[in-house]
Length: 133
Image (tube, rainbow, N blue to C red; front, side, top):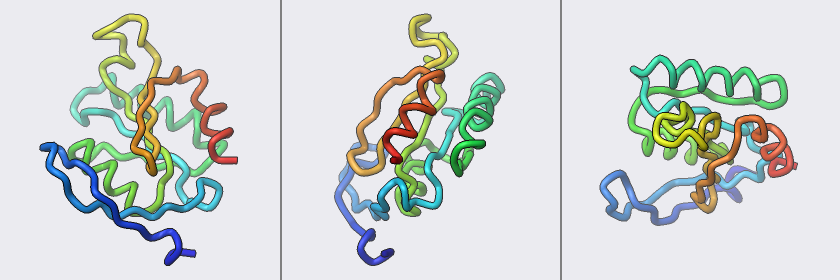
């Protein structure tokens, strides 16, 4: 199963340069960790508090991983390497600092497509449950 899931592709790094990305493309049902949750910055208490609320929301329903260390791009890459299908980033939009309409939304990133979308925290569990099934 691990050999079948192993893949390498090209993806831009933090500087926009293309580099090889190692990915375990486990089907979401098979992935040991279903979702990783990241506050954008580790030194902003409101971001950390909101990220931990998201962890508390999801943890009773699936195995999640919390990480606040390093640049956000590196955190994504670490999760790609271990096969985590989804990552959730809590950022300043989540706190409503840039746009009040985006308060209590997070960025949901899919491992395989690297597509990102804004989603309300209240809709997160249902959206992940559908994608994992």
